[in-house]
Length: 140
Length: 111
Image (cartoon, rainbow over all chains, first blue to last red; front, side, top):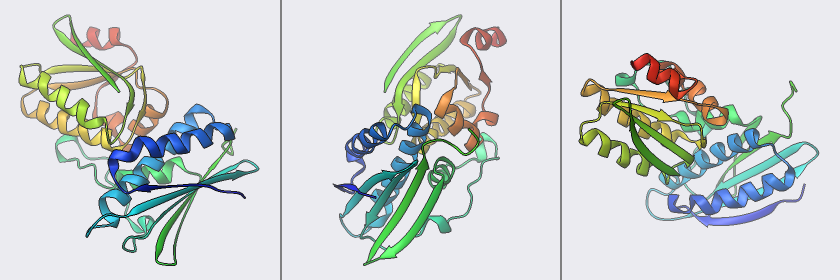
């Protein structure tokens, strides 16, 4: 699988640039609008997580690599921040009433829901999250 | 993201289109807070033209909902479809807020 790569400063203000990069590749791959929007939600949540948590003592970067093979579209998101496995987070509260509700943890929950496969690995002092979306869902 | 509001049958109808993400959700929150500040308590939000929402958008919606509830007001959503509907359903927002299939339905219920 050949990857196209782009590196961004870990600043939430750059979200549009990240989205444009991923969306362009998802369009080339031919992801339908519904699956593409889901993937973009997952990408935003992952990017914002890195921006807010990976570099508490300063600034850093996030590298996005994406490519596809067969019916799999793959995005890898790498940062050199503190070790953090988002997959270790507990499931969020999705049942409380309005006044008791907090929105913490929903970002990672959406990543899980909108991607067909998610992997985390720590490699060369980097956190690497690998998101996989299929061209079509298994049921279709 | 584009935000518009108007009065219909003494109800404030808000139309949000485009994408509500980490960059645009604060704009939604500010505009909604502005409406609450001038005394609007029943806000019907039409999401027919919203194609995208992330957890940042939900956070803003929740902040607004709490502010409204503490004033005895109400937040109602209409035309929630596609990926936005998925996000509402996954997060449970689809059950904690009144949701209607059309603006006419919502206005009818509000009388």
